Length: 519
Image: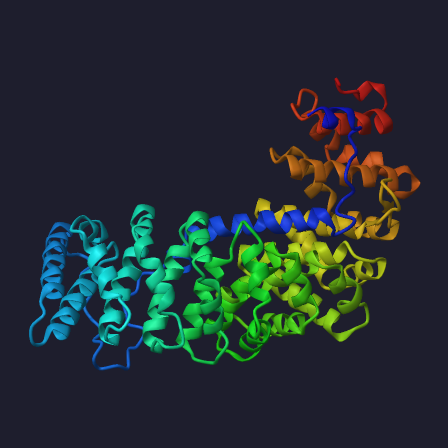
C-alpha cells in the first residue's frame, strides 16, 4: 500500500512497552492456542462414554469397550439400532416410553463403544430427525438423557457430522434451563461444547440462538461435574476470534464471582476448565481483561501456580497470568508494584515454571516475564536480581526455538528503558553488561541466523544494543568474535527490506566499508 511505502521504516524497540504490540501478541497466541487444542480431542471435543449421572441405577454404564471390534459389524449393528429406534418412536401402545428409552440406550451404547464411533452409519440411517424428536419438551428425563448422549457422541465426530446437529441445537439449548434436571442439562451442555469446539460458524449459530446465558448460569453454583462440563463448553463457545462473546460473558451477573470462587476453592479439574475461560476472556476482550485485572484473580492465579503440580492446570493459569500482565497497564502500575508481596510471589511462581521440564510452561513463563520486564525500571531490576536470570541465560542456548525466542524478549527488555516519542529505547548499561557477561550474545547471534523473521529482527536489535552500549568500545569486538558479522551477511540478498537495511546499517556504522553489505 502507498502509505506503507511512503512511511519511513522504523525499527520497533525490543518490547519497550506492553501496549498494542502485546495486545496483538495475546490475540495471536489465542489463535495458536486454539489450533493446539484442536489437535487434542480431550480438550476441544469429547466422546462421552460414561454417563453424567453414574450414580443413577436407571442409567447403566457399559464397562466393556469394543475397540477391536470390526467396524463393519459395528456399523451394521448401528443401522439396525436406528431402525429399531424409529419403530419404538412410532409405537404408541403400552410401555411406549420404555421401548423408546431402551432403543435410545442401545444406539447410545453403540455410539460409545469404539474409539471411532459409527457416527456416519447412524447419520446415513437418518438417526438425526428421530433423535431431535426424542428431545421434545415434556419427554421423560431418561429419554432426554439418552437422546442428548447420542447427540454428544455424534458431535464429537468429523466436522460434517458435528454440523448435522444444527436441527437439534435449539432443543439442546432449551434443556439447559432451570426446569431441566441436572443430568439432562449437563449432557446437553456436553453436546453443545462439542459443537462449539468445531468452528467459528457453529459458535456464531449457538450464540445467536442464546446458548451463552444458560451455560453461564450453569457455572454459578457449586455442583461438581455439572459446573465442570458447563465451564468446558463455555470456553469452547467464547474462544473467538470475535471478542463479543467474551465481553458479554464477563458482564453476566455472578460470572466474575463464580470464576474467582472456582479458581480459588475448586478441585483441580474444575479449576482447569474455569482457567481456560479466563484464558479466552483475557486474550480476546479488553473489557473482560480490565474487569478481571481489578479483581483478586491475579493473587488466586499466583497461588495456584505456586501450589499445583498439575500440568493441565498450570498451562491455562500461566497463560491467564501472562495475558493479564500484557493486557492491562493497571496490573503493572497498580498491582505488580515493586516491593509488594504479590510481585515477589509472581516472580517466584514464574521461576518455578522456568525450571519445569515442560516446554510449554517454560514458554508461557517467559512470555509473562517479558511483559513484566517491559514495565518500569524497578520491574527490570527486580527480575535482573532474581533467580530468573541464570535460568533464562541457560534456556537461551539450550531450549527449543519457540522458548528461546520468548526468553530473548525477556533479556532484551531488561536492557532497555522506554523512550519518549518514537526514538530508540534508552539503554540500561549495567543490565546489558551483566547479561552479555553471562553469555547471552551467542544466543542472539543464533536468532539472527534463523529463518524466522521476528527472531532475526530481535537478534539484530540486541546486537545493536551490544554494539552501541558496551563500554570501552567492546561491542564490535564481541559481536565479531561471536561471528555476528557472518550472521548479518545472510541478509545481503534477503527479501526482507527491513532486515537487510538493519544489517547493512549496523555493519557500515560499526565495522566500516570493508564489511559493507549490498543494499
